[in-house]
Image (cartoon, rainbow, N blue to C red; front, side, top):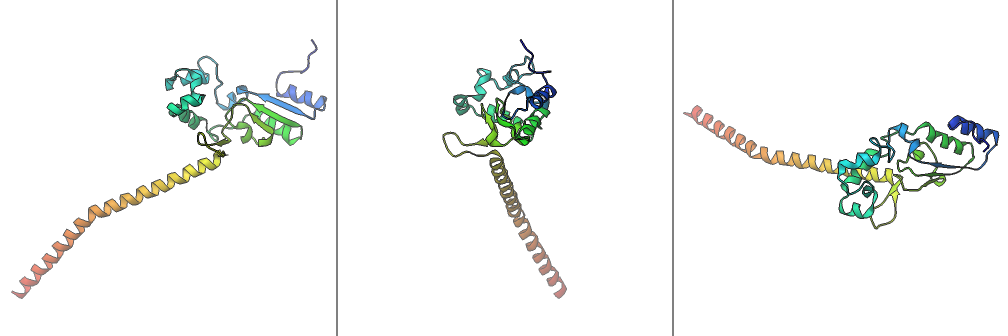
Length: 204
């Protein structure tokens, strides 16, 4: 069988694309392009995501991505989502290579099995990316539409948190005022009585 690529790395792929003057490139990628960013793949023994999901006491590893299980016990998915949320990891050289294909005008489409959104973080446009298993680009409440941008959701949640903290702070200040008010009244009463006694002694 004739050898197609000079080597199975980015340099070999880039050389093939240049030599053949490829104009319509389709990229199909999976967990391997994100492992160097610190994101585990799914099935590697000991380090894979499925092995590390045992801490959630799931009936089986895949349950964390199943809607029926999420409806009953959403905590495991939310914890995993917090760990993998965009911004916690940076795109790798492979992600930026896909972006470079787009910048050169030769990327037709990128089909990704990954849910980490690192293709988008690297600058691959949404209309060029097909996330086969979904990703963190958008989210919505179960059984509702429309979807919203994940960053917008994050901002709204952050804003609500700040408002909640402000309300809590105002409540604490009000409680402190209510606790101090009787003491202030007693102090004023004491000073008033003391002044009256002193005035009486002066008259005598």
